Structure formats: structure tokens, C-alpha cells
Image (cartoon, rainbow, N blue to C red; front, side, top):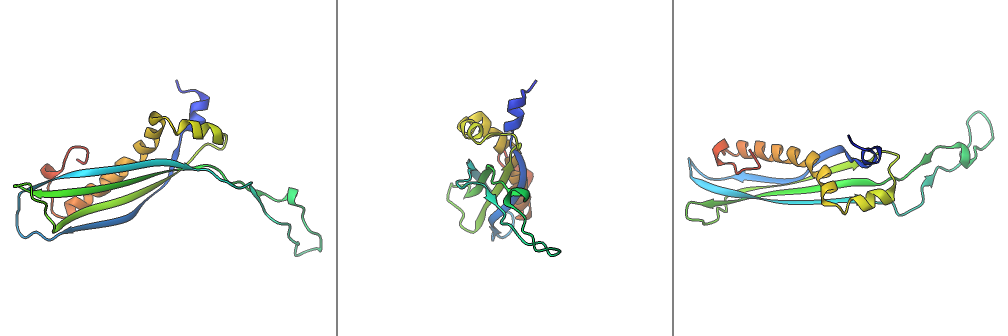
Length: 167
């Protein structure tokens, strides 16, 4: 069973988006070629550097009184996690020559939130552990590879041409 402290530190994927993509296939007819996919993954956290911001006092439209800072809600800056994934397919003909007229590359970004009870110092310590970084990648990487695979199919590739890890 998972401890309560571990659950507090679990990242939760809140946003996943395609940040850039370039797919083209200018080959004519059926060609036999192969390719490999290069994967680049980076995981990190954004830690706020400023003190939490407080909304300034404002006048009420019904009276001339000004609300104090303590009465207003605070915009609390919190730690956010992220993962950046870049997938690039390198295409080669049967003689191992690179194919310049076939291109497939895409970059993805995943944004993560943490439990509001998680402490910044605990998250900073945990992010150094590769097993903890896997919690980020395990949520975002399947989404990236699924989109990449769909784009390769639209380029005309068949399922048997896809390398392991993409199928």
C-alpha cells in the first residue's frame, strides 16, 4: 500500500500539448525503407522564486471602505512539474542512405500539478530520483507516441514499418 507522503508527491498531468511538428512524405509509390526513432525526454519542476502575491486592497462600489489585505484571497505560487518530449524519425533506404524527402519530428509538453499539501523541498528532493521522474514520463510519453504514430500512418507508413516502442 502506498504511504500518504508518497501520494502527496505524485504529479498529476493537467495539460498535454503538441508544441511543434513537422511531418512530410514526398516519396512516390511504394518504397521499402526503414527508420529509427530518437527520443529526447526532459523532466523538471518550476519553483516560484518570489513570495506569494497578495491582491491589493480595493474599494467597494457600495461604500467608501477599503478591504484590508488580510480579507482578500491570496494568489499562492506553487511548484509545477513539466516534461518535454521530442520524437524524431530518421529514415533510411535499403542501402542505409538517409532519405531527405521524408521527415517526421514532433515536440510535446506536459504540465503537472502536485497535491496542495506537498512541500516544495520534498518535491525538489524527489525530482532527483529517476524512479520519481518516471511518474511524469509514464503519463505523458504514451500520449506523445500515440500522436506520433497517428501522424506516421497519415504519411503512409504501415504498422509493420513502425519500430518497437511506437506500435
